[in-house]
Image (cartoon, rainbow, N blue to C red; front, side):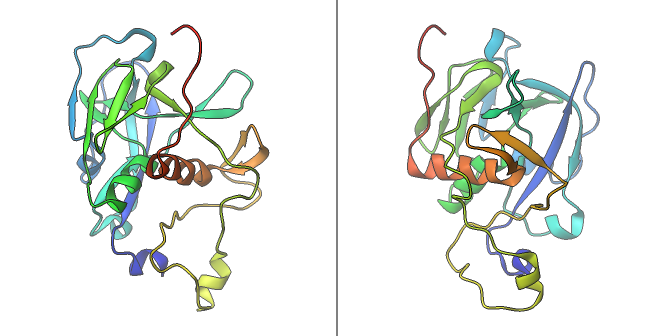
Length: 213
């Protein structure tokens, strides 16, 4: 019901990294491409992840979408998620994360990005975003349960929901699926990362790495 009533639907994709050639891109994936992007094959430690296959949202959900983005994240060596990749290379094209795509759609500027693979910034809506290893952005993650949730049971029951004018991320929040660890929550829901990224970008606040690059 939430998806049906949405006016600016943005769909998700999941990339699998690896070596070798990328499989053919499925229809609709082009919505997730960065607006202006170039890749000369360099970039060192800031080079984006290379993917070899991708899964895209079901066609019946994707119909009418205005944007798309990947749902991948980056886990540090201790297993904690603190960063989000801002670009993934697939089949010679560069793709953006879901949270960024939603932020662009919310401002009525889908695809308004400029990115050179391996650069230390990515420009979104004219604002430079600082990038670290793997073309990642450090997230300003809120405290536990800081992002409001709406129960799927309430949606199916037809209860009035305070969603008008809100950005809504649809994802699993059960106890056994898509759980990640953040600095403030050992059992956070994966969808929270993408809501956090959108909030960071729209609010103009994100973390910058200190020290040597």
